[in-house]
Length: 324
Image 1 (spheres, rainbow, N blue to C red):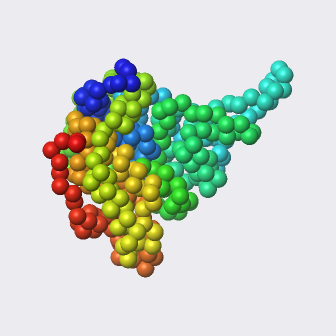
Image 2: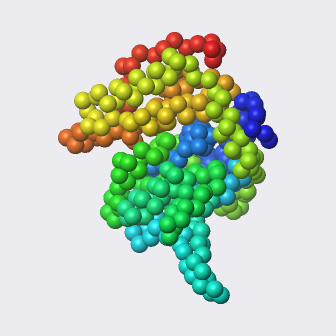
Image 3: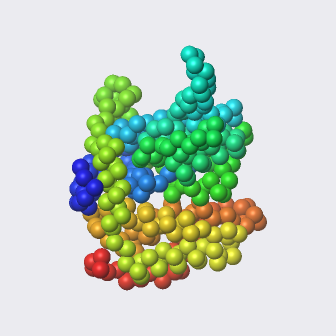
């Protein structure tokens, strides 16, 4: 593949990748689409849901199908930054200091139960996510692209956890919830498990590292009309004006809308973004960036709810027939 890969080729590869992942993950096409869009947008994703709904399986499956080097880090209260980033140690022969890379040096890193690690370890992960580098003994070590973090956390378990600060949540391009399967989907899970007679599903790579990078570059060619771009800004601005929100979405939220809507358009076989693309990614892109007023917590109101209200009230620009 080349840097001039066409949008149609990216769309075809993306759908083949999702079809292959669905051999392991049943009935979650919408979630898989959004996660693949995050990957195309070169962004990190947070999957927040209860245990046992295939969060880890989804991450592993995408790494396999996209041909990316995968690493999983189980975050625990005693996890040290060097356990994630790597450490410097003296050589046996000459005593010179040598850097030994940690599991963060992979293309796709699963940070499992990320909120179980203390703030210092979370900060080390934050540097890697934001700067695409690790600093050890005063020296910066670049991470190979693509570098993507998929973090998970359990939203209903708080004992022994360290909630992610707003600054770190803001680094995730989107937040997803997988949800329970329907009874029919759950039966398909059981039926497929019986048929293959083993837990593992052998997935076939559809892409490789270079193909993923080329697909990410293709996303930059997706056109965003001025009216659609201003619609993104209007949505983000309105989150700052809501009486229920103490802090609205930052400009990083606007950039997330831009990147994700471009990725979704590419996934749908278009080289231009429509307002519907923006609306489809708005909740996962913005909901986790809002900080609500404390008195509203008892009402079981979330940032996602506020974003949905904003979507109902902000005027939608007319849908254009082309990207012009």
